Length: 398
Image (cartoon, rainbow, N blue to C red; front, side):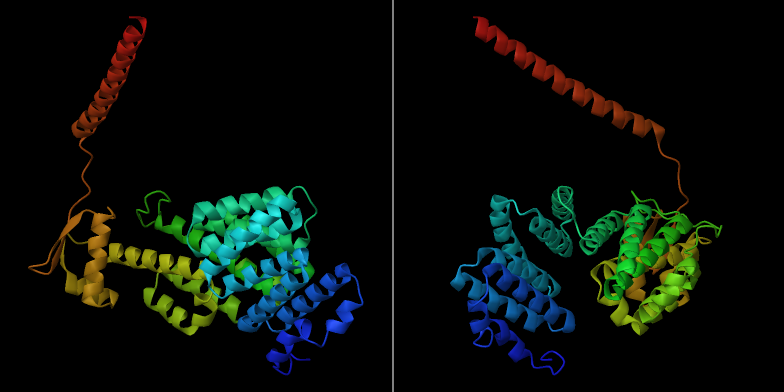
C-alpha cells in the first residue's frame, strides 16, 4: 500500500521503527528473519525503479541487525544491498561490501548465499570491464551451486551471466545457447521482466554472429573481407514470429528487429536513426550498449571499405560526402583502419587524398630471416644457461 501511494519514507521506517517492534519481540529470530526478508523482497518487487528507497531500507535493516546481533539476517540483507548498489552503478561501494561479506561467508560455508554473492561479484567486475575477475567469480558461483539445490530463477541468472561473458569474448554461438537456456527457465516461471532482456541478448547474438560472418570478420584480428553471399545475414525472424516472440512483443523486441534490419542492409544512417528512436531500450543495458557501439564501428568500416575499393587514389572529402559524415570523423577513421591493417594505404593530408595500395604478398625472405633470428636468439639463451650451469657444477665440485 505504501509503495502504491508512493509513500516511500513510510516503507523505510516500517520494519525498523516502532510499528513492527512489538511484533518482532514476541516471535522467534528465525521467523523475524523470514518476515523481514519477505517484506523487503515484496517492496523491491513493487517499486523496482526506486533504488534510493531500496538502499535506504537495506541500510536501516543492516543497522538494526547489528544492534540486535542478528548476523545471518544482516548477511542476507547486505547481499541485497550489494545488488542494489550495482544497479545504481556504484561499483566501488558494491565491490567493497561484497569483498567483506565473502570473508564472513567462507568461514561459515553458507553455499546458498555464496552462490548469490559470487554472482553479484561477477556482475560488478563485468561492469568494471574486468573480464578475467568476472569469469573467476562466476566459476566460484557455479562451484558452490554444484553442491546444493539451486532454484530455477537463480540458475537462470547464472546461465545469463555465462552467456554475457561468452558474448564479450566473441563466442556468439555458445552465448546464444546459454541465453536460450536461461530464457526457457524464465519463460516457464512467467517472469517477463527478466525474460525480455534474455530475448534481446539472444537476438543480439544472432545479429553480431550474422554480421561477422557476412563481413568475413576474423575474431582474432577483426580484419574485414566483405562477402557477396547472403547466407550469413542476421536472421531473427524465427524468434519474433514464433509463439514466444509474440508473447514478449513490444518496443524492446521492435528495437532489436530494427537493428537487425539496418545491419542486414549495411545502412549506417538507418542504424543511427534506430539508436536515436529506441535510445531507452538500447542504451540502458550495459551489454547491448557496448556491443552496439562495436557493431556501429564494424558497419562504418565495411561501408568505407566498399566505397574506397574501386579507387587507387581518392579525395577524402569525396569519401565523406558519399558516406554522409563529417570530414574529420572520416579522416580519423581511415587513419585508424590503416594502422590496424584493415587495408594498405596512406593519407596525403597536404592534398586531402587517400592513396590505396594493392595488397602485396608477404616478403618470404624477410619472414624467414626473422624466424631464423628468433631461433638463433633462443639457442644462444639456451647455450648461455647451460654454460652457467656447468660453471656452477664445477665450482661445487672444487
